[in-house]
Length: 266
View 1: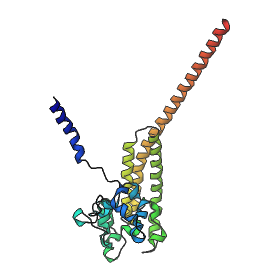
View 2: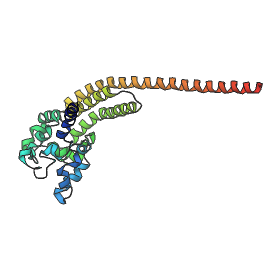
View 3: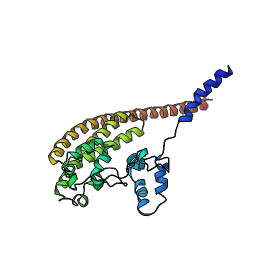
View 4: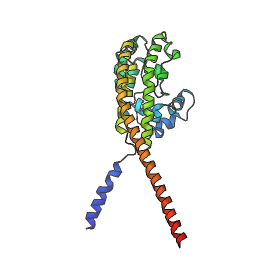
C-alpha cells in the first residue's frame, strides 16, 4: 500500500520538476542589464516602460528574440536573437504580430515607397515608446515630414466621427460590465471592429477610407442597439429594485405602527 502511495505522490509532483515559471516582462535579463546602463544602452528601457507593449507584458525578447533568462546567451543567435532590423525590414519585423496591418501597409502608397525611403512603422509609431494607437497620430507635425498635410487632414476628418463612436461604445460596455452584466461577446465584437477600422488607416487610400468608414458606422449602429438593450434592461431592473425597496420600507412602517398600536392597547 505504501508503495502505491509513493508512486501516486511521485506522479503528482513530477510535473512540477519540469514546470518553468513564465518570464515576466520586468524580470528579463535584458531589462536587468540595460536598465542599469546610461545613455543609448539604457534609454530603450525607460521608453519601453511607458509603452503599450510594456502595459501588455510585451518585453525585449518578444521583438528582438534571444533568451530572456540567461545573461550569457541572451543575445545569442542560437537562442533566436535577431537584434534590431534594418529600415526596410521594419514592416516585416513588426508584422510578425500585426499581420493585418502589415498586409494593408504593404499594399499602400507608403508601403510601395519603402525601398525608396518611404515611411514605415517606427517613423509614425516610434520604436520602444510605442503608444496606444489613436487618431492623434495623424497630425500636421508628423505627416508633413514627408508630404503636405491636406490629404491626411481629410482622412482624419473622415474617420473622426467613427473614432468618437468607438470610444463612447467602449465606455458604455465597461460601465455595464462593472455592474455585473456579461458584455464579453459585445466587447470582443467591438474590439474586432476597432482593429479592422485601424487597419483601414494604413491603406492611405482616401476613397476606400470614405466608403468603408460608412460601412463601419452601419455595423457600429447594430452594436449600439445591443448596448442600448442592455442599458434599458438595467434601467428596468433598477426600477423594479427601487419598487421592492419601497415596498419593504412600507411594510416595515406598517409593522411598526401595528406594534405601536398593540402596545397602546395594553
